[in-house]
Each structure stands twice: as C-alpha cells, then as structure tokens.
Length: 219
Image (cartoon, rainbow, N blue to C red; front, top):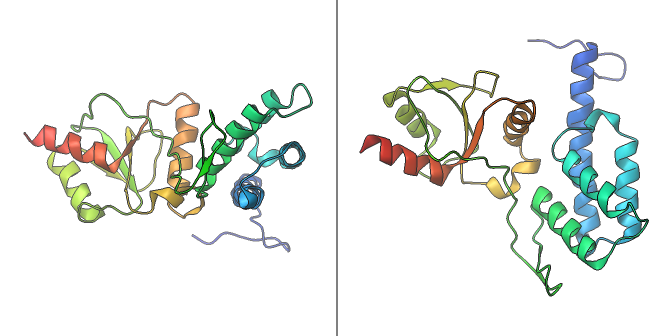
C-alpha cells in the first residue's frame, strides 16, 4: 500500500500522521533516556528535563513506555525534589526500558552491569491452543519462528501477522529480547501492551514459557 506524503514527508491522513509522530517520538524518547543513562546517574535536573520533554510531545501521552515514566516522574517530583531512593528507582525504570547495561541495588545504591530489558510480560497459568489466535515476534532460539508456528497449528491454534483485537497471545522470541524496546519487532509488543491497557484479554508470553506449554499440551 502506498501512503501519500505531504511536503514535510509525513502521512497525509491525520490518523496516520499521529501514528507516525508517536512512533518517531518514542524512538526519540528512548534515545533521550539512553543519553541520560550514559553516566549511570539520573539527577533532579535530568528528571525535570524528561518531564518537560513529555509535556511537549502530546502524541505519546498514555502510550507505553512513556506513560510508565510519566507516572513515576509525576509522583517523584510532586514535592519538587528527587530523593536518593526515587533516583535509584527511576534509574531502574529507564534501564529496563532502554536495555542499558545498568542494574541498581536499591538497598545499597550499588550499580552493576548486564541488566536485561524488562519485557512487559503477562503470562497465564496455562496457554490454551485450540481455536486461539497467536501472533509471534522476534527471533526464536528453539529452531526458528516457522517451527513455533507449526506447533501452534498442530495444537489447533491460529496465526496472525500482527496483534489485533482478536489476538489471544503474543509470543516473544528469546533472541534479541534485551533490545526489544528499540528494535523493529518491538512495535508488535507495544501494540499488544496498548490492547491490554484498552481492556482486551491478550497475554504476552516469553519463548521459554511458550515452549513449556507446548510440551505440556503435546504430552
């Protein structure tokens, strides 16, 4: 499908234009957060700057992950200052979103490396395959996405390219998950999070959990 662009090279449709701006702003926001984390410190001035940036970008209001940061900042800066505990918590939140190699011990304040991105998982007690719709994203360690898709079909499930209001499960491949927030396959995860927040019962599951459920279903 060809999308008509205006003189600023943005989609002509108001709806598409808003979606384009939101996607662009989220990428910019993640880059901003990575810059803030460069010295493994988030001070009061930087926290205030992030909050001001969010105020100037209404297209990402209420959109994950900016909504998580906004809620935290509104709470932390309500008294006009950022305590050491709040700073550590904010550092954890930003590291989780960006996949930055930072891990903070909130009790001691010590900083460690090799933090993994916090995927917004929401896993059920059991995956039901029959007549359920599945969407997959990312790269899979088990043997490729096609292998996982065939398992779903064999167990009576149905496949979808992208999450929709009919989707029951989004399965995230383990390879590259650390950097999902600024990778192309992260768009499906963002869509699933938005669907959950709108009230849809869609589960977001990891590859290891998915495989364990396939094995259980296959006996």
